[in-house]
Image (tube, rainbow, N blue to C red):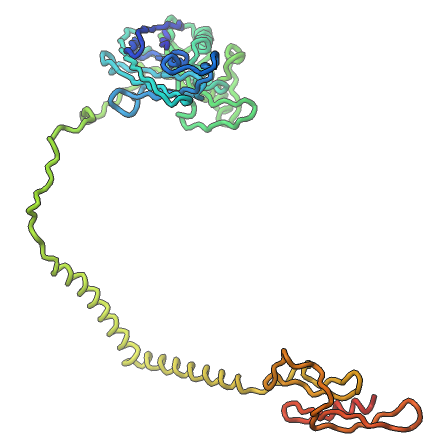
Length: 429
């Protein structure tokens, strides 16, 4: 594992290695970016190797970091690991209030192949520095780099070199690095190799250069309000590797910042005081009479329901409007029953399927079948000449000569009215 501190544009590696499972000590400075890489190769020795030689590099390993005795890390310390096949990174910027307080970070490595774990402790000893804090601080937003890419020592060194070339300070330190997602940014779409973006804060000991001040001109402020790129003369010194959003640059002179003091309560240790073991109540509890509670629970709703019933009965039976409503309701019921009884006894004309039909051979009129007296599904549509009542003899003319023969038709009655018209129509054929 390696720890990196950035001072005055230089990358200083501070690493103290010891035997396995022993504590590791690092010494970052307050107000300076602290970067500690959790290398997968280092932890692979804690897990059994693959059955096949040369496959151990494919072990998926993830890390969990927390302050010893607590579920999470300190507020100034962040952690990131993109995949289980990449190294994890601890990074952050400690402040002066953490000086002289050793911070023990528990690092737990999980091997997803063997489901085994390995635990190490990282002791962070924060040291004070005379340069903290640097009076002039500038924060840049770089659009084309993710936070883990910026934490690499080579990339961060190139960026500090470009800033130093534009700013020309005597001392230049990287103060903090923050992912754009931690500032409310959105996860980019997986197209065109889009990046999340990263905020990089640097501090220097001299005034801001004229190039950095160009973003504060009215022309560039107007272009930023219209979502247009401002015109910055030194942008070409960054453009080759870093795409900076100059509208989001922040220039702060802490010598002119008015400190705001607020009365905050003294924070405790976060641990509850020891009040001894839990003492449960004794078994000799006083008995309680629940009869009064039962009466109240039952009597109050019953009394309310009784009052509402009396009011409703009075409104319907004792007042003129209620009596009228009851009479109307009764009359509606009587009318409904009467209409239903009339609809059962009403006479309707038979459908066309019940009118007389002619026998295809004899030419006789076949009586209709009344569904009230017969089962229509079992009776044939045409009947024979046997047992036919109310028949009428109708003469028919033969094809040769003037001789006539008699045809028999049944007398049809529909609703009690003889159907003589059908007979007349048959004679006219």
